[in-house]
Length: 389
Image 1: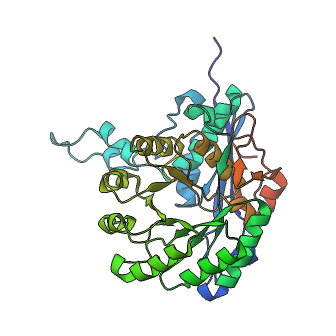
Image 2: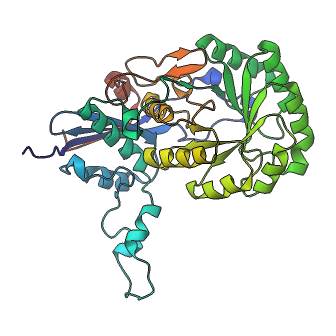
């Protein structure tokens, strides 16, 4: 019987691929903070030469990341539990260096899954891609297969003036998108911006994401009513801080737009589902691919549609998100995987395809995409490999 394949090599790049300046926020709203564009790109190679790729926002210290990633080498691929990767070094967690034992202490095995490592999504994506490539299957097959071969995706823009918003919408239309997600705050020209977008294209739909910056229902209701009357605001996401779920529920009764809640942290899902606050959910992938799929399934049982949240990512993470979105029957709201069209490079050898407001799920084993190694090196600030060389 053949031995199971082991991880033979791990490589990680720290990359910074800037947003295209014209499509960043209007200057009046300020600039993005340093480091917001920093990403890890990870490649895991097994002993048979199969590769798996991952991408995620860079977080945590470099030393802890290096320790976790270098520890993957020589581990059998079959040993990894993808839904929860125990990447913590021995003794890093308090229950691994126990105080005097107590008869009242919880079983550590019942606690471990609650503490996800910051690199969970990065490593899980690469190992999932590797597993699917070895099997000759598309990535979505790991979660039950595809419900669709394309995913509804909106263009994206940050806080903009009305004139700048029109330029963004015109570019989105030229690229093949049929809607846009925009960031905003209560102090922005919200009504005027929607009116300008409607004048540019009466059919173009808008998702308005306030990130909680409409504060309270009493502060925002008059503006929200006027925004709703414009007629092109299809979705309103997170108008208030998420600890005011009762105000979300009240607002749902007053607006035509669909009210969507971003699930963050993942443990907030139950409260949102039972509160009546949401007409849909934005579930991001920070908790990992498998956990995203479980949350989408919970929403499906509550008859709620969802979309896969993104971080204006590069091509690798976007491809993984497209496969994940295709695997969920209720992932029917427009996602915001527009990052590859907003940055100087997506780091792939081929562009992802947009057709009639949808992005096609890449075909082929794994994620169905290949990484442009020349572009990767061009935007790389730091590279490490284990074994070295």
